[in-house]
Image (cartoon, rainbow, N blue to C red; front, top):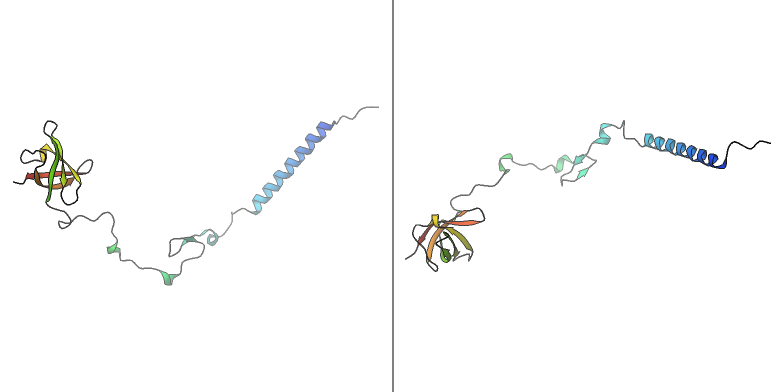
Length: 150
């Protein structure tokens, strides 16, 4: 009598292969059924409501807000002369003549403001009372047009 040509391992491999094929067919059928292809335009539309939230329903036209285009401000408003502090008073807290820079302490705000020797009208020493104007510099405010008060 002859032995069977199909062994146990071959049967197991065939079963696994058949199961994989079945799983693959089921997944493809599931994808076909849940596919979003062919949906109408209304199903794909998204709307933004009056609060800025995304919704599937169109916004209520009665709640629509009207804006005047001229009132919309783009960028930063320019400074007017009234906003700029023209002259400040302060005292020199540190000044190094050899390096050509120092610091002035503003009497109103108590902040320390950088001053360069090129911004001076006359030589300064520490503890001198001065008047000055400020401009934005590389690392913050910088004193310009510095004058000693007698």
